[in-house]
Amino acid sequence: MGDMDLQIARQSATLRTQVEDKLRQAISSGRFKPGQRLVERELCESIGVGRTSIREALRQLEAEGLITSYPHRGPVVSTITYEEAAQLYSVRALLESYAGKEFAENGTAQDIHTLNEAVAEFAEAAESGGGSRLIKAKTAFYDCLMQGSGNVFVKQMLTSLHNRVTLLRMTSMTQPGRLNHSVEEIKEIAAAITDRNGAKAAAACKYHIDMAAKVALDYLRKTSENDGD
Amino acid sequence: MGDMDLQIARQSATLRTQVEDKLRQAISSGRFKPGQRLVERELCESIGVGRTSIREALRQLEAEGLITSYPHRGPVVSTITYEEAAQLYSVRALLESYAGKEFAENGTAQDIHTLNEAVAEFAEAAESGGGSRLIKAKTAFYDCLMQGSGNVFVKQMLTSLHNRVTLLRMTSMTQPGRLNHSVEEIKEIAAAITDRNGAKAAAACKYHIDMAAKVALDYLRKTSENDGD
DNA sequence: GACAACCCGATTGTCTGACAAAAGCGAAGA
DNA sequence: TCTTCGCTTTTGTCAGACAATCGGGTTGTC
Image (cartoon, rainbow over all chains, first blue to last red; front, side, top):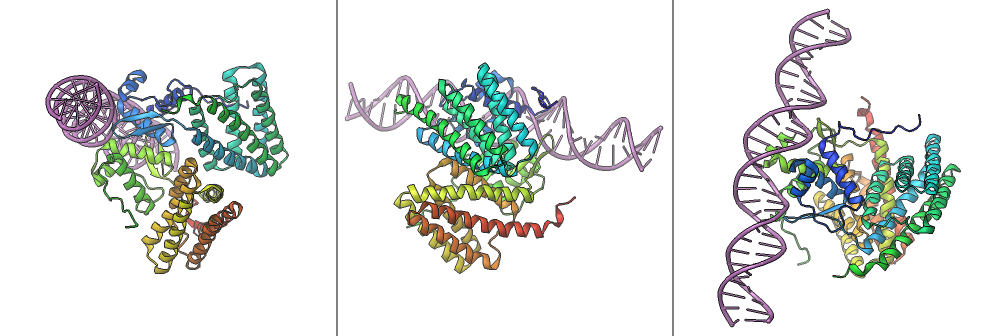
């Protein structure tokens, strides 16, 4: 009874919250592409709720940076430039290193146990190759990492950054060789944390993000024929 | 003609934005105290706008962490525990150090010039003792620091953290001796940045925040007779 | 043919009024 | 005293309405 799989449809949540999740997912999954306009009435119809709920959900997503609203023109899915992508990965490296360090130095034994389980699950998922299972496993790993850092602000900020990474719309794991490297790097992180080695954990986290950033930014640079005009 | 005092009431902004600012200010100024309930209808009356604008503004503040909403009970001004305050200052130190380092290494000469002007203004304000002038000067300094970091995400996150610090409702500068120290520390930061010394700038930023944190947390610990039940 | 002014449709921003659902509170009853 | 019931308050959500604004197309002029 380790995993408390929180019920998918917790209908108790307010409607607005569900709309938020739906929109977030639509953006993450690429159904709404960066730069695309989001027209209120269309969203009302497709989701089946009133404008109130839609608009309030949009405000939330706007604050998270997933969408950008221009006055009297409405919201569009945020776009992210190459520069911003580089900045995003820089901050991520900074915060995740910190999280890793804190985890290693102050995390509970329980947290460490959970982390290692998440890593094992991720490694398995990487072998069996299930795409959605991989994403789930990686999410679980990061949730655990942020949780273990013991810092609610770090957790919140990293969550936001993770969401925004999806705006780049390239999984950074799709590269054939990358996935194996990724697994190794994550194992390294978990090992350092289990060893209670803060400095090493921070370094491993930073390395992991730097590698992911390199792949992502290279990819962006190559496919940047559509950023000019 | 140095100060371009942007017109107070830029009526072009949407109403919702103005409400956000008003609420943010009310919280920062302590007119709304942590833990206090915010009833929609009261806000409507006191601000003089409809529920729509109020609710959307509240969603924004909620995302920023300034208020916390419980379903079917409405929003309250966020409270912050001692632990969270400590975490907040930790992240602040981390991010501001990073900002200082980046500024020193990559900031433009123009940014550096502006920074030094802001520091001078802050020092003057500290001597003349104008409370609101001090706050303004400090805000200008931090704006410049974040701007100079060249990282929009850092800027955004630090802005959010700065807003939340006000939830602690103790200026951390009110301590008689603290202000002078604060001025010195800030001068140190600016000097390091002007020297293009990244490591030193980072250290100075961290020191500055750590000192502020120490004062703040000591104060919180002393006045924690009202956190039990 | 190019450029400016203008008008019109689409969409947002905002208000009002309405109502179900839930939370909290007080009273009634065991 | 404790539980239960019902009432009040407030939120969550909808529908409809309307002014303001933006963008695009049209018209008119040089």
